[in-house]
Structures are given as structure tokens and as C-alpha cells.
Image (cartoon, rainbow, N blue to C red; front, top):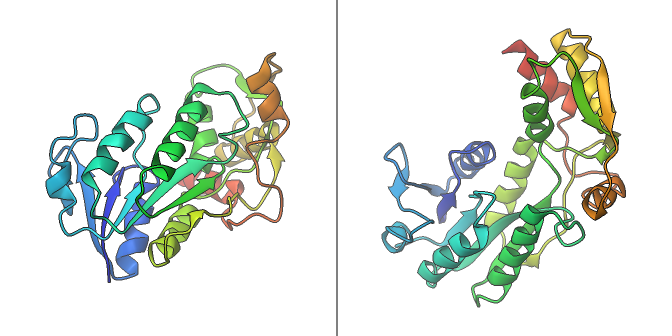
Length: 244
């Protein structure tokens, strides 16, 4: 049994990851700025409390992201984690091939971890089912649904969490094979699945945008190809969301 600190442990991926680690009988701590069950207080943005939070920790599962300053936040974490035997970092498929600002920051963070001298594992996954779900929920008051002519290979957070738990039980391995969902689809297909699940029939406006970033997404650089790693489908996810 290892003592594991999870950053981002209260987020959409963090919750099932903590559950998977607990099921594997690990002693799990959740880094947080607020008190709570299994929480240890620390702030990646300032470094405050990180040394104390990492005392006695064997493995760090680094899931936290603020979409703006992942690199400096990770630098503060690594500085405090010098005595840790294994850092596992969650990244995204295609970050080194798509010139999207958030992805550029992810690549810089990966390089920071690789240069830290701390034994590590970097896992890249495709977009979560929730990524598309949140995009569609944000449009629920619009008379139309805005889509895009892009391929996607969304994956269930539970499948990623299980893989992270496996990596926490394994030796540091550097960059491990990317993982993706079980189906390679167009966003328009997911929109249709979502509408069937929620019983809506809105018209769909499909965007085709210019630029290198959109072209890289259109080329599928954010997918792994089939067969995928995950098992949970977007249709299953949409059905669960509609039943809430």
C-alpha cells in the first residue's frame, strides 16, 4: 500500500481516480485549499502548504489544471516533491501537434517534469465525454446547437481513473502509450446522440473554421485511432446525464 497525494482530486477526473485508488487499498490524500474528507491543505498557485502535504507521500497523481498556469504550478509542486518516488502526470493526446495555447502549456509542463530528475509517468488521454457534454449543456438555452466538423474519440473518466490506478501500482515508466475512447466519431454524431437522449430536436449549425489549430483537430491529431483503450461510450454517458 502506498501513500498517494492527488492534486485536482475533487474534479471530474479526480473523484473517480480517488475512488479507484482507495479500492486498490492505498492511503489517499487530496490536495485542496479547503478542509474536507481526506483533504490536506496546500495551494499550487503559491506553494503554501505543499511541503507539509507531501510529507510521507510515495506517489503524486497530478491532475490539477487551471488552463492558464499549469507550468508554474507544477514547478512549485515538483520543488516540494523532491522526496517522492513517483509523479504521475495527466496530459492530453496531441498536445505536441496542435498549436492550441492550453496544449502548448501542457507540453511545457511535460518537459518540466521530464527535466525534474524525479521518477515519473506521463499519460495522455483523449477528451472526456464530459468535454462534449459541457459544450452542449452550455447551449441548452439557444434555439440551435453549434457543432463543428471534427472527429472525436471521447473517453469515460472512469476508464482513465482505472488506468491511473494501474500506473500508481507500477514503476515509473516515462511516457506511456496514449489512451482513447472506444469509438471514433464526428462531433455531429455526438450531438445527435445527445439530442436523442434528452428528447430534443434543435437544428444544428456546423462550423468550419480556418487556421492551423482547427486544421490539426480536423486531421485527428487529438485521437489515438482504434481500437481504443476505454469501454464506456458517449451514448451511455449521455443516457446517464439525461436520467439525472
